[in-house]
View 1 (cartoon, rainbow, N blue to C red):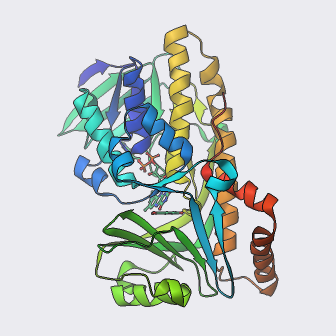
View 2 (tube, rainbow, N blue to C red):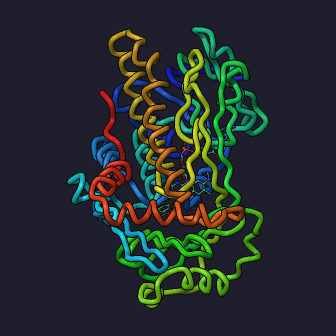
Amino acid sequence: MTSERTQVAIIGGGPAGMFLSHVLHRHGIDSIVLERRTKAHVLGRIRAGVLEAGTVDLLRDYDLAERMDREGKPKDGTRIVWQGRPDFFIDVRRWTGRQMMAWGQTYITEDLYAARERDGGAIVDEAGDVALHDVESGNPSVSYTRDGVSHRIACDFVAGCDGFHGVSRQAIPDHMRREFERVYPFGWLGIMVEKPPLKDLIYAYHSDGMAMASQRNPMLSRYYVQAPVTDRIEDWPDERFWDTLLSRFPTEIAGRIESGPSIEKSMAPLRSFVSEPLRYGRLLLAGDAAHIVPPTGAKGLNLAFSDVHYLSRALRTYYEKGASHDIERYSDQALRRIWAAENLSWRLTKMLHVFPDEDPFDQRIRESDYDLLLTSESAQQALAHEYVGLPFED
Ligand code: RFL
Ligand code: PHB
């Protein structure tokens, strides 16, 4: 067994863990990142594609925005199209004066790995059997194995950034943890295609189900359709995907969508989930380790960044001022923003998807939600503020 010491042991090398490690380094705080998968696997994941204004600011503040500012697409908002009703534009620019950014999680993760490697950051990939020890004490540690050798890292804090299926959350005893959950009976079947995307990001409501048009770069488009969660990828050959997608968009927009062979296809189940609190002793959770949102509203990745913003600030207060009050309020502070995002994602998911057990009452309520958006400037303004992302608290 080897042993070493760091200030913050970070479990998980996804966006939350890598951004935390980068920010801490900028403030002179040491960390070691333990990632279960290979670096190639982590960098091969597709996932999210839309950044809130606050996430864009964070990337710029921490010198991670050069490629995003060169190649990402600033967006004034997102369009909703609706079978038999007028289109609606979530006009973020008009109501908040801010812009969002179409920019893939894959590129952000690549840039984070490059930045940490350039700065000599300690990242252990293929770390097996990661286990947390004594997190309720003042002397926590983390153990793992790699290539058959056991290692132990003593630390001041453990940051649990290991996603929904990670081990960190489980280190909080059941009686100290409260979980809130909604599981949806459908998923998003997504494909990537090497064709120019539509100019706008578009959510489409159709009585057969939701569809969505997004983008990664001038020659890479991302499309999704709502599909039963029990479907397998093999049930969705490209031809069926394109037929379904195009049938859910109005003819004029469908006519502008350039189809082609998919280069990636995946099914993401939809779930709303929050585990409270985010802190147990010296263990602090961030990102998907503590919460999941359905992709409607594009909040998942953005929440990972806002958690890390609050968490890194709390750790700085601890190391720079010797004060733990920001650590103590981290959970409550992060949870306010998390619940706001859970709320929006849940409402948008209900409004834009067809549920298998719904009845005509549900349908009328959905139409009335949409009609309110079409006609009420207050509703438009409120949605734009939620969609662009709530400001960070002091
Ligand atoms: P991640 O990205 O899941 O990273 C967690 C990392 O921890 C590692 N890990 C472990 N490491 C060590 N020991 C263990 N025991 C470990 N267990 C796990 C994992 O290998 C992984 O590298 O969480 P993080 O950093 O909090 O980032 C969150 C975002 O990735 C996530 O919120 C979004 O990608 C959610 N999400 C989407 N969000 C959107 O806004 N739009 C999307 O279109 C969108 N699509 C998606 C998604 C999430 C998906 N998942 C999680 C299944 C599509 C999928 C398929
Ligand atoms: C994406 O580009 O992958 C994307 C965009 C908007 C969403 C979800 C995913 O709400």
